[in-house]
Length: 450
Image (tube, rainbow, N blue to C red; front, side, top):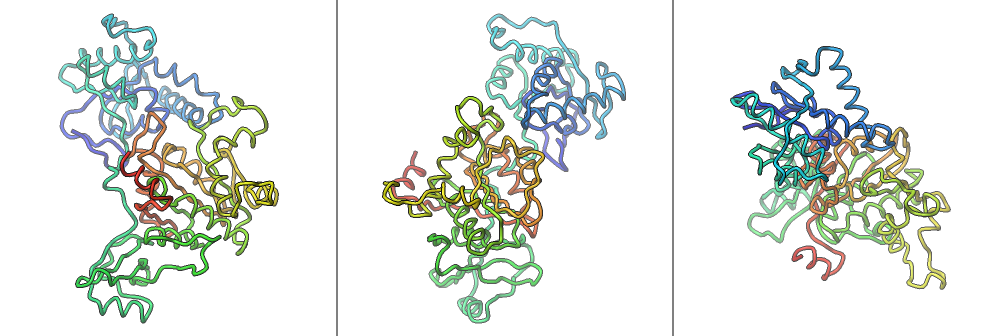
């Protein structure tokens, strides 16, 4: 038994041996120190695989270099062959194995995985009274480990079950007179202070559910205040449901520096984010430009596979963004007849399309930054992006945790969900989970039925 507590794997009962796979260290270099008082075993073959990534100019390369530095520091403190003490009370050692796996398992295309399994089997036999667990984000390797009688687990540090994810909205039942008071005086006292900053409230008349009001928690004043409503719409976009109204409030609030919008396809996440950004950059001049990007999966893939300039290489990946911008600009189907396109905004310097591959090391001040499909980012990749925000910059992360292309992540441990969980108590951050699709009747049915 174990649980995640205080940033690490809190174990219950016996100490355990955890054998880590390469993808765990590349996903989270701090995994070396996340297993509390237990023993962490790193197969030498994992180090060899990590070494292949150390020169890459992307997040995998950064993680590989961080792992190498950490292991080198530990090496100076003692013998990593025999075991080095970790700060949380555990031990770390590097191991190899001369064991030969059964012919049915030991296929050539899985050479490194086979050696990792062999190290795990050796550890299990050497200490039969100590639970031995292989930790890997590779589903197939977990299955193969189980076939050999090994315990295998996913690395789910900071895991949040998707059905328990903070939605950013709470429903409060009250009397009809309370709702009337809220409308007349422009606020209503919070019944209790057990709320997060910028949490939205749906006030409902307990006797008449149709009699309701929408508001937002203002913790410092201990009250619920009305949400921001834009009568004319934002670049022609008006909220069509309460979640979209909540999202628009966050997007138009300059005091909120980090916004996360989670929802299935067609809920309007990206369209609303770009519309609000263009409004803020062009009509209110709050930001210098709108910077839009989405992961080129996997993050950091070499753009040289496609011909042309960086912008031309990005075009296939960014077409969904261009579609949204052209919709906002009222582009006709026949551009030759005078329709306006996203190219006009790019030429004016209002809109910039940026590959996430090159964002590390930058400082981005006074910009409205939209990162679409953020569910395909790891927690460390999201940290890299958000930490680029300079003075006056607002970052909007949008995505659907159920549509993940990264084979080593799922709906519970991706970077988008990680940010929602970590920032929900921060006054400069806000979140809304969007449920109702507004793209079209067909799109809504497809999202629900398929």
